Length: 104
Image (cartoon, rainbow, N blue to C red; front, side, top):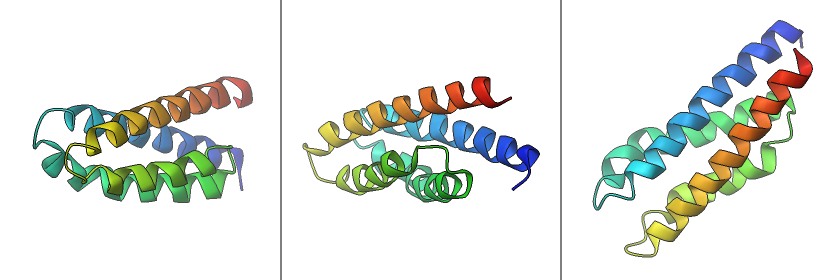
């Protein structure tokens, strides 16, 4: 894949990872996750595709984030999974930021 394409995919993954983290963060407000999951769940799958295509080292964390997105629906315990999702998204954001700085 061309470096321009990889750079664009990494940027798109970074932006969608930020949106996922915001969705999890909003989900800490009672009943708001039912609204924010409308973009969190599709974006975690999109991030997995980006991670596989770019091979940027975030694939495993993206798979875990998919699991966290669905486990976040569990009443009361879902808050723990949302917090874990925020942490995983933060780790992915840090990894993608380092990747952008190192490669380009």
